Length: 144
Image (cartoon, rainbow, N blue to C red; front, side, top):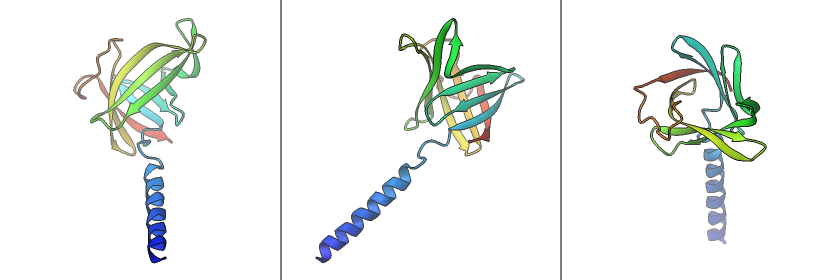
């Protein structure tokens, strides 16, 4: 009887610990971010549903539905926080044909909950930046 109570208590504590460790795990990057790239102020929004939106000079690219070179597209993102630095892919998805039509590869690191550094390859090649030495942008959190 004592063993089953102890086992039950241990199992409950383990489940509780695991559930708290997964709440919000690796999601500190979700939110609206403000960055400066070559003197221009821009915004990046990463939603909890894995949609991304870029906004520069009042122009918005991305989100659940937008016009991308004449097609109705969505801009999604995928992260891997198990790598160091963490990787991020911005995936342009043709909504009508349900196929990927483009991908931007990048890396990021969270300096704090309010600051994120990111480097993205905008050339369209399969190359992912290895570090933050070229064309990296520091983003400051605007909102969650």
